[in-house]
Length: 477
Ligand code: IFM
Image 1 (tube, protein in one colour):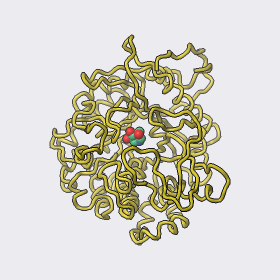
Image 2 (tube, helix red, strand yellow):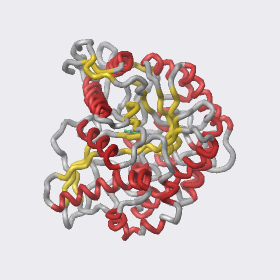
Image 3 (tube, protein in one colour):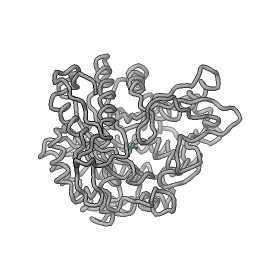
């Protein structure tokens, strides 16, 4: 990435509504470091990162980008960008090192200081309660496939909300339950690295149940709280109109999108999935009252969008996992005989196809097929192997193009009546990209991992200008 963004006319072609939230997102294990400080317990990612071959170069989050110590300067950086909101996650093992019991005051104090610093800088705090760092002691007792973990999560949510709810109005419960369940327990490419399809389905249900129980616990504590989950949604297309391709698309759309949206927003699991998943005993985990709990009214839905899946059916062959170098086992439980097909679009440094039209489809579908709930894009961005250029800057024109294209879609959706209220790009700064270690960079801000120096990329200046002006300029990028 060496080219500078071409000069742009300054007039706006695309103005967002007043009050639209402009944010950036991060997650605890990916940025905080200080994994042995402040009484923090161990999480499943601390353990998983020690497994030989689990993470590229054996890298872990012990230091990450040292946000635990550098948060005041990071918040100042957010204010410089003009962010009006910041999405971060709370590390459960900082709050309950053993996964249950009373709160560790030092853990609460850290997030309390972060919240106060954000508010003083004019940036709204948007915490997420679970972004994949389950306390290891809970995994030792069975992890998310165990129903009790959902109850422990609600207890933890109440502790955090009790401490911060006087200053924090907007909350997310679980982040990307698809990843936590299926990458964690089916393909095993994420912590805890288990490869047990039936357990992954139990995990999915218990993550949803944990969400619902947490919503009720938080609302009981403070009725005015605004809370919802953040789900990772994809547009899904069949490669052709052949019946086997259409069925592959139905299954992948089912597992990626409807398995989560239907219980959350409609209070039921889709019948076709219940049939597909019957051999794994999925329905046995769903007890009376669970769906009502999961369907508790929410105040916002976080949508994480990155790409589209194009699929074809391969009767007689096993499902092929989406280009993961970290596991040969498919995360797509109950969706055998499916192949993920490159559709020929340009890809990011993650190999993910860039397709903003998929975001339009996702937003339109939410608006059309589900009860209205305020929507927020809680993640959207592009990972590349960014490097500092000779002039000491990072000229990430591809990321600017990606963000520009997706924000245009957001604007169009708002114009079409979709209740989209804000946008958080992933990510504020480069960080630990899970099994990819530090090799992939999603940040608006480059981090020199040797020195922890932060260098805003061209995309940071571009985003700051978008926020300042309230919209996107015309011209070609
Ligand atoms: O880095 C992750 C994040 O933790 C969850 N959503 C996708 C991002 C990019 O892979």
